[in-house]
Length: 412
Image (cartoon, rainbow, N blue to C red; front, side):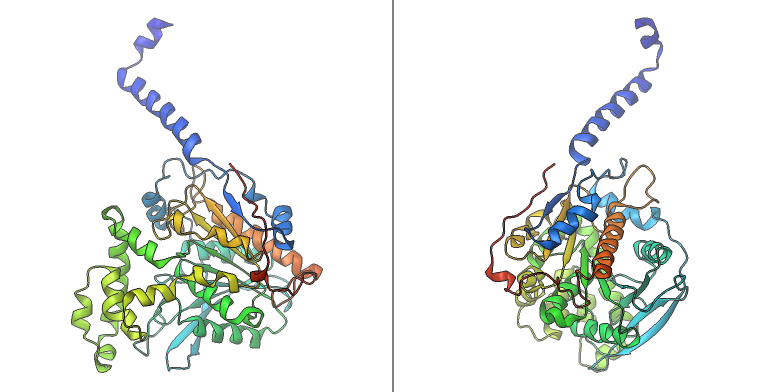
């Protein structure tokens, strides 16, 4: 036996030892059950009964567990099924333009009372995002229609005014999009999902309009809950690649619409000199929306301050290692005062990554959780326990912010 071991080349022995050591590290620090935070109530009961992903361990892609690799590699590794869209432009109150991208291929035997999934990507998002393509394809397979909301200037949507997508003020644009959907399908419940900045917009929208939002339930993923903490994280040298990417996307919008911006008296050359998102916000975004300081703008943009006003079921998925939304900024403590809100926090996952298994082309943790959540809400709508406006039909009308609830943290 000893002779046989010595016969193995030294470099192969080192490889095996390294593989064993990494496997031990992977199973101890990466493979964990998510932490789930929600108060007692009917929402919690349904999640416990119909969303099994809350109880199982999440196995991040073993060779891609780091937050940077998980965030970046999803662009190249996730499957991208073909989806053809029909674009519907929406004229906004200030003359701007938003859009709804409807998949051309409809579900079989579709009924006008079946839920519609409204998908809202982030500031740099578009209709060809891998997670959106997979969601649309799989939702269609189970008989659900989807539609993507594109904010002004995003995904090829024309920018007719200097007012760009900022996450807070665009909640009124989302309002018009929801109204357009309800005009076309008045009997269909809407289940909304917001990703990253799209989640910020969705939370502000739900908090502002309550049961008048015309949304039955919602989920957000990789949402930055405190913009001050997000900016601090993105300012770290190790995270500057993401900061520079977002800055580049802002500059692209400026360059593509340079003449229109200059006609409005905006010094585009000064804006294009900005090197970080912080500078872009300070010199352009905050002043455009009427804020005297960028700190005032960040405070208004942060959605955690609105959570107590959310009245419909809202599920939030975040990764503890997300550089856009650091773990300490996730307001899980607010679930003690609002039983309509649930937080799911995974140890790994990066920003909109959540790839799982050796083959990352398969469904990730976020995909599975979203499907389970949609099916749960669909079941509640069919049974009459949940109304089209997001009310639990046997729940007290007492304002949730005036009640105290024990929190249900699911341990590892």
